[in-house]
Image 1 (cartoon, helix red, strand yellow):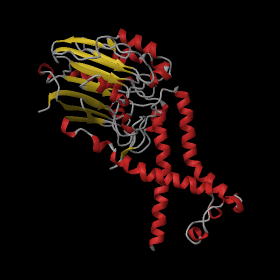
Image 2: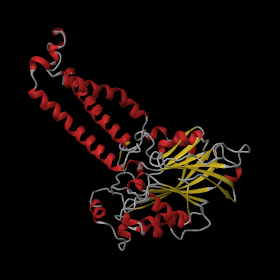
Image 3: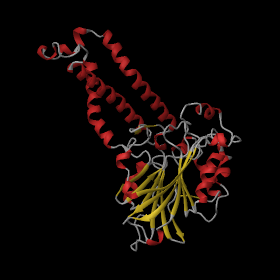
Image 4: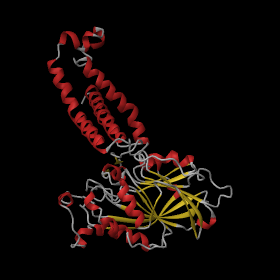
Length: 406
C-alpha cells in the first residue's frame, strides 16, 4: 500500500472522527443546559439526524453541483490543485477542513480528559466491592415493565445488576472528630415503573446496614406520576437516627412533579437541601450541607453559610445533581461534593470509557473521585435511567468513609 493511500486513509479517519466528535460534544453539552426536557429531546434528535445524514447530503450536493461555479479548482491556482486534490466543491472542502480541524485539536484534548487520567487515585482507596448480578432472576417475584423486559434481552445489559462499594476518601482538611465518618451516597433513581421498587429498596437497605452516619441522594428521583406511590415504599421507614438529605434533578423538573416529590420526601424525614442549605449538629460535630440543583432550579444561598467558621471544626459538604457545579463547591470551600446525573455514561467501552455524558465537561467527570483544591468530588454512576440500558457500567451505591490524608 503506497504512502499516498495511507495518507488519504489517515485524513479520512481524522475527518470522520472530527465529524462524529463535534456532534457528540454538542449532544453532551446541550444536556447540561437548563432548557426544558422536551426542547432538549427535540435538539438531541436534530443533532443525531444531522450527524448521520450530513455526509450523505454533502455527497448528494456534490453530484448535482455546477462544476463551472462551485468546484474548488475554480478558486485555487492550477499548480496547487492539478493532480493533487479531489475535484470537490467549496462546500465539501469547507466542512471537511472544519471536521479535520476539530478532530486534530479536540481529539488530543478529549483523550487527555478521559476520566481515568483525572481520577484522584491518591485520595481514594476501594475498601470493598460487592456485586450482585441478575437480581431479577434471583428474585422472580420482582415485577418489571415491558420496556425493561425487552431491554434485558440485549446481551450484556447490566441494568439489573448492582455494585455496592465502600471507598475510603482521603481529605486534607477534615476535623479529627469526623475521621471515620461514613456517608451513604446514591443517585439517579429514575422511577418510571419499569424497574421494581424492591430493586431500589434493596440498594437502600444495604446502605443503611453499613452503619452510616449520613445518607445523601443527589437527584433525579422520579420520571412518571404513576411512580409516586413508590416513594414511601423505597424511601420510607429507614433508620430515623440517620440524617437523610436530598436534592432534585432535571428529570424531577421535566415531569413537573418537583414540589410533589419535595413534599413527599420531606414527610418521609428526608431533608431538602435543594431549597435551603442547612447546618446539622451531629455527635461528631457540626456539618454544613450545601445543595445545588442548577441549572434546573435556581436559588440564593442560605445566609451565614458562605464562609467557613474560623475554628475549622465544621465539615462542609455539597450535594449537587451535576458535576458541572464543581467550581461552585470550590468557591464555597466545600471539602466533599457528591454528584450524579451522568450515569457513568451508561455505555462504557474498553480502554476508552464513556463517550456520552450530559455535562458541559463531556465525559471528563462521568463517574469516580476527582480533586480540585480544596474540593474532593464523588460522582456516582447512579441506580437507573430513563433508558434501561447499562453496558460496562454497573448501577452503583457507595459508602464513603472519611479519612485524613497524610
